[in-house]
Length: 168
Image (cartoon, rainbow, N blue to C red):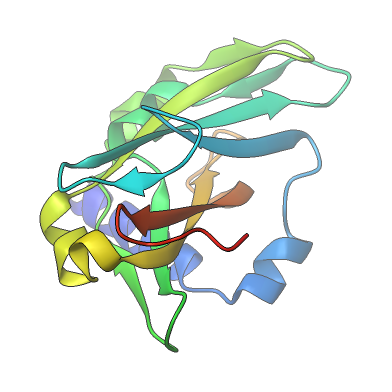
């Protein structure tokens, strides 16, 4: 339990760094992207909003990747309101350090999927049918057998309510 609390504290600290710094620390061995689960457009329709994050090994060598660990806790998500200067973190799952021992060998060019979700209740608070926000999605994990979290990569999804015209 003590290790889980330390691990959770490390996650919170690593996810609170500014985007400018994180962008410079993006791991060059990975490419991270996200897509809405139900369609090509990310439209909130009053149900939990599910999406898939894809992590691809773009290096020339196989990488030991703690996929079970990352899938168990989910991605780190920060919501940014596109109409006003407001952001809020979405709570992520508790990490289980025992899962760090279960690694998946990602070969060059191979991808792994990490499911993500934002609750309908949370998106209702952001405007429901008129919501217009950007979800900044980050994947971080220890990659070298230690408890030191490193940013693997980040991406964004624009989520709009069904009553919003997309202007992008």
